[in-house]
Length: 113
Length: 111
Image (cartoon, rainbow over all chains, first blue to last red; front, side, top):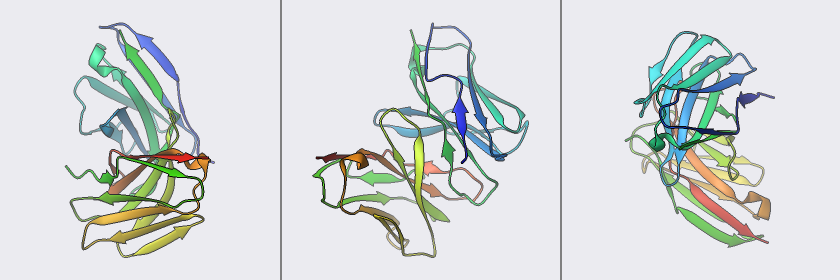
C-alpha cells in the first residue's frame, strides 16, 4: 500500500514564525502536491513537483515556498506565517504522468495565532 | 477556472437509499476521478473514468461520464452510515499529473 505521511496532525504557530510542513511518500512517486483545504473552497493547489529539485506554482503560491531535495520528501514552507494561513494542509503523491490517482496524507491542521 | 463543481453541496439520506452526486466541469478532460474524504482526514481515491468511457462500476459505486455535457455522476447504491463523508470530483486536463478538484458534496447517511 502507498503510504503518504505528514509530519504533524495538528500544529499551532504564532504570526511571523517560519513554519515547515513535511511530507514523505514511500512508493517512489515522481509527483508530489501540496493543497490547502478551507470550508466552502474545496482543495486549492499551492505547489507541486514533478521531480527532485523541480517545482511548479499552483493556484495560490503566495506566501509559500517548497523544497524537494529527495524524491520521497516534499516540504512546504510558510516563510512568515499569517492568520489567513490557518487551514488544513494536504499532501499528495502520484506516479508519473497520465493524470492517474493521487494518494493523500492524513492532513495537517495548522492554526496561526 | 477549470475546477469541477459538485451538486448538491449537501445530501442527507437514510440507510439503504441510493445517493447520487453530480459533477460539472468546463474544459475537455482526459479523465475524471472521484475521491472520498472522511471528516478531518485525507482524500481516498474511489474510481477513475476515462474520457472515452461512458460508465464504470466498482462495488456499490457507479460512475457515468457525458463529455458532450461536460458532466459526471456518482451513484452509491444501498447507502450505509459508513458512507457518510465528503465526495469530490477531480479532472485531469493536461495529463501531466495535476488534478482540478471541486468543492465537494457532503453526504450524510442516517442509520
